[in-house]
Image (cartoon, rainbow, N blue to C red; front, side, top):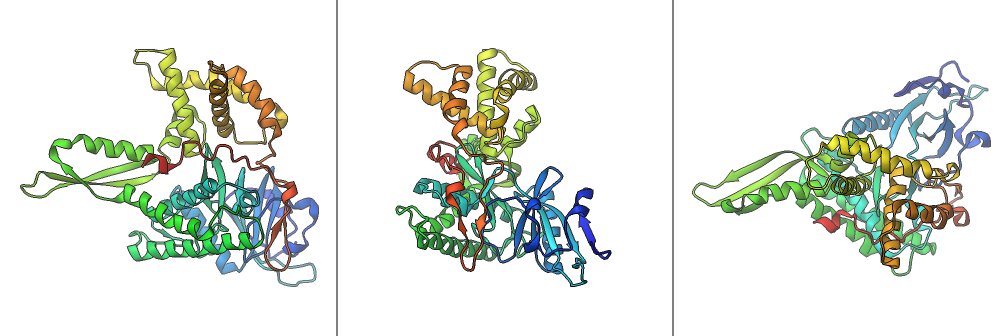
Length: 439
């Protein structure tokens, strides 16, 4: 390792020093590399073991590495959905003194998949819509924070399951720019047009490779992000007018925004002279209303839709356990956690715990119990449903914590070894949970 090596890191991890920085990234030994699916990238990217977790290492210029590192750290402070920056490594040199490219190190987002892994399976058009919806939510959240992406695409996004829907996370921020005063309509529309064109190109590429369901129209799907984005943006930021006698609509607007997963900081309420009309406009804080409530009550860190589903079960538990009484919310949450959620998680066999995130397992268990009850026309206990779910569903899934199938890198468009890819179970793609169902 060259003595001139310079590490700028957001985490204190001495194991960074043990990686073979004196070798070009494409020459690193197999025992250091983790075989995970990757999206298309203009840079060389490798996944590597580091202190019990996995990091993504990208070769780039020093200027771009530092810029993206700083941008990702800023986005994290703003609670934007993005990968976690770990370090920038510069001053790399081979044993013979040849200069090697600087790298950006980010933490791999567990249980996530690039779009090419998802689309390598034959997914239904409804699932394609949910992926685009997830990307639209991500873009809205970034724009609310004043972030202009500049390279919106499926390739620069990772997707995680979120209780029947997907949650999207920004991976590549090297073209992004943060504006403290917020974005203009022109900047937002520019990002939206970039997203539409890029998504169309990516899906047409999959179509040409025979990896897109024949019922999916690439152009229609790409146009869908425009519709999804504008619908959600209007709901979150638009003015609403109503008669002064309908003041209940103020509360209704707040509750509707909470149902969409957003908290609000304040409301702007105006009246026009002698007019009986009231106009309100919310100032949205950020997404994560339900996930923050669940984390506060139980300590469970879950996706927004997962949190919504778990809170619904918690509320049902409270209603059944304390009918007609006003019981402390935190007390009920503690009981539900110790008597319902944790026993379920402990009952999952150790060898199956890498299949899905714990909140996703619990969500799917509740879905499974509902279907069993419908099919058998009787109430199914959680314990009975759990046994059936483990044996008939969970045991037959591939692990989503680490997917054993690298992208086959060759000249031209990368391809995936789909025979080794995880089975992407699309059975829940029509389940409620998408924000579209709540507008």
